[in-house]
Amino acid sequence: MFKKWFNKKRKEAEQVDKQIAEQQAEQLAEQAETDLQTEQTITAESDSAPIEAMQNEGVTTVQPVETDVSSNIDQADEQLNGAAVPEDEAEQESAPQKQGFFKKLFQGLGKTRQNITENIDRMLNSYDQIDDELFEELEEILITADVGMETALQLVEQLKAVLVERRIADPNQVKSALKDVLADALTSEQTIQIVPQTPTVILVIGVNGAGKTTSIGKIAHLLKGEGKRVALAAADTFRAAAIDQLKVWGERADIPVIAHSEGADPAAVVYDACQSTKAKGYDVLIVDTAGRLHNKVNLMNELNKIFRIIERELSSAHKEVLLVLDATTGQNALQQARLFKETAPISGLVITKLDGTAKGGFVFSIKRELEIPVKLICVGEKIDDLQHFDAVQFADALMQ
Ligand SMILES: Nc1nc2c(ncn2[C@@H]2O[C@H](COP(=O)(O)OP(=O)(O)O)[C@@H](O)[C@H]2O)c(=O)[nH]1
Ligand SMILES: [Mg+2]
Image (cartoon, rainbow, N blue to C red; front, side, top):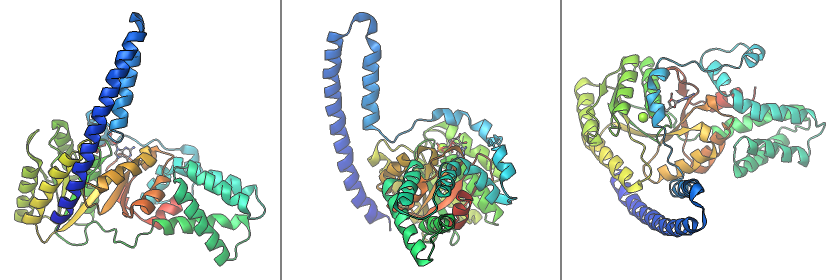
């Protein structure tokens, strides 16, 4: 099933890696030349700083999407103990009584809501009729909240249509119409269920630090709460800390973790996990992976190998490939998603760290540009801070 897809995509990826290598070589050559010139011109006492700055610049252009957050993994203990999410007390007081995950979502989206909704409220209050200027201001507010230019324009066009349809002429009624437009924009025709049947294998991919391992712990807890028997596979064997981190989450959620040691072949871990799933009859197997996007071909080969094992060992299982995106990176996450879309057949998105950003608006452009449904969202570091995505609930929490 994945074989054809991979072969085609791998050829394309090889081409891209070749281009990147050529680009790198070119840049190195250019840099060497610049360094030489710089060395010749700068004085001895101020030598290293400008060269380092230029070198750093070179690295970021070649690898725009790779984020190194090894320090995050060192903080694993802290997060696992459930570091408290700062709450906006003033907002809590004014908020109506809310229950369960909606309350978390409402609090988590506080910064984005402030960025979008408070500005919209202020803007709408200053108008006594709906005109072009109002729409232009609305577009600007949406763009500022990282909704993305084209998506903002499209949303405003849709809003105009709804206003005409509902014969709305009062600026006070614009907000509720906009809420419906936003919910509609996030509603997917594709199924957003991650476990439509059992067994299901969920492969979790994404760059380092996006929130893969912690999300897996939370997904496992969520599915267990729904009565599923879940197991985890520690196929990010790149660092020992990543394996340990998954094991700790497994302990917390009381879920078995299949792991080998650091440096082991990820495919071998997945093979064992598949055997275990068959033998013990688990409903869901969730596979953690390493997020090394800097070499597309390597990443694809690794994922392809894992896929082949899953296809062979659990051929009748439903396969889900979830891409984890860090909301705090806003529009950059979109760029990352485009690259990952080339390395694996992604079936859904997990948006993490919505609690830490005012850029939550990027969720709208991701859905529109990638045509991949958002399936799960995460608004904190605690085990129950992740939930299935609900477009209406999301728009509600955003536009209160
Ligand atoms: N505030 C907040 N932090 C999160 C969220 N999801 C993940 N994190 C943090 O992001 C960091 C990286 O997460 P991790 O799962 O190790 O990322 P991985 O490298 O993709 O596996 C950790 O410190 C997590 O606690 C979230 O929804 N909110
Ligand atoms: Mg990890």
